Image (tube, rainbow, N blue to C red):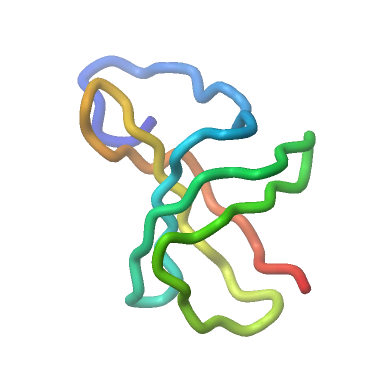
Length: 76
């Protein structure tokens, strides 16, 4: 994860896991409803507007702080 003192391996995203998503300048928190090897569905607490194929930064709580773990692409 980005920002940690020592490098940690990023575990795959699981169902019912809280994530923070940054879409453009909008940031929101959500909980994953489904998680597969290459697709994740997230129920957002605050909805955001986006276009298909837009990139989204994905962060996870690591040691009590939100850490960037990767990015995703919005699908219909």
